[in-house]
Image 1 (cartoon, rainbow, N blue to C red):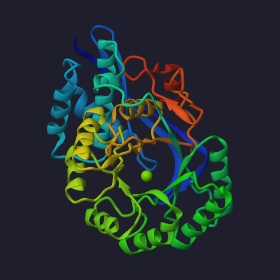
Image 2 (tube, rainbow, N blue to C red):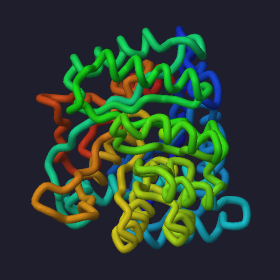
Image 3 (cartoon, rainbow, N blue to C red):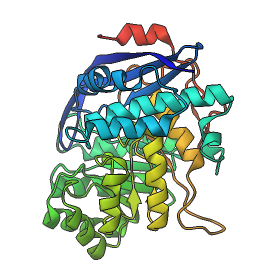
Image 4 (cartoon, helix red, strand yellow):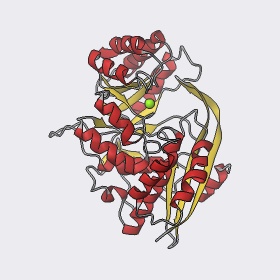
Length: 382
Ligand code: MG
């Protein structure tokens, strides 16, 4: 079996109503999808993570110009071999960011092909399912004005609760006073201590402000505090871990086992959050998971992409062992992006849904999805 073609699709659509996170305004949703075909008729799909401010064309160009020529003609079952070939060939200009997202997309597609070849879901190829369903948490609380939206965000929290979510992640990083006001409003509106809250500033602050915010919110019983400082400030992560009684999470802007190894070496994290579409795909996620396990760090994947990335993330979530074993361990939870995204779920013919507060892991071969080509073509720009 040989890889006979690699096709990239850049999907984009403008949002009717732009929204903000701490780093800027999101005006469009986009995805870089890759379709890998084999000479015996198998088709695998992958997706490169496109962060809210990231042009999807960067990963697309890396796939087309750097990696497609490297994998064409190869055996797609050699996914680890091909991962290292792509990484080694791009080391001098890659290692982080969109180049690794490009590798991630191809890697996911190769695992999808392997699953179809062996007639197994990817979690089976990863060694079996630790769980058959996962609890989702709502990611939302983006801003429509920027500041002074505490009341609206409190209503949003109630909407997530009423939709069945038992956990939700609040976007902060809009100024300490505004952040604290938002958290009080949400807490008062929910008046339900069984609902878990996570906070995410998307590295809006330096160490002093990040510490002040954490101290002000320690009483809120927060499950994790995500990206408190910039990803480069590994010592800052470690310092905050030492000073706060809140689990520190990060890693959506880190890449590969090489990158996560630095975070683990410096005891920077309680919870590692690799994104399947940018950490290096399933191959890298497996390596990062093993490293995290050996360092006593929980893994809770980040996922903010479209349906292909979500499907890949679900396969990995099925296979992740808990880090701290007990009768009632802390299980990884699924990031369920509730922000506006016109084609996220339409991309596949049978979108997954939350039922009774859980999301089932697809059991079909490979990623367990059928991509809807009409939707791909409707949003494709190249
Ligand atoms: Mg985040």
